[in-house]
Image (tube, rainbow, N blue to C red; front, top):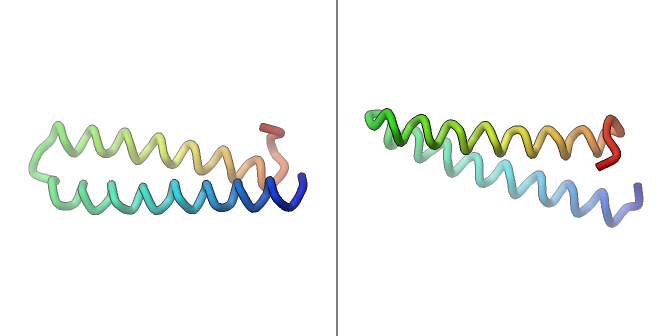
Length: 64
């Protein structure tokens, strides 16, 4: 993997985690609304999966 691709992946991973932090704060603020809480949890889980996939690529577990 070249340096530019690694840089882009790390940057994308960082953006995903920043977005997840925003959802985490929203989830805390709206914990009394069960539907909102579940929706936000699904969004956070999806972001976690995307970040994990990128981590796997960076570690050499997957090619794409």
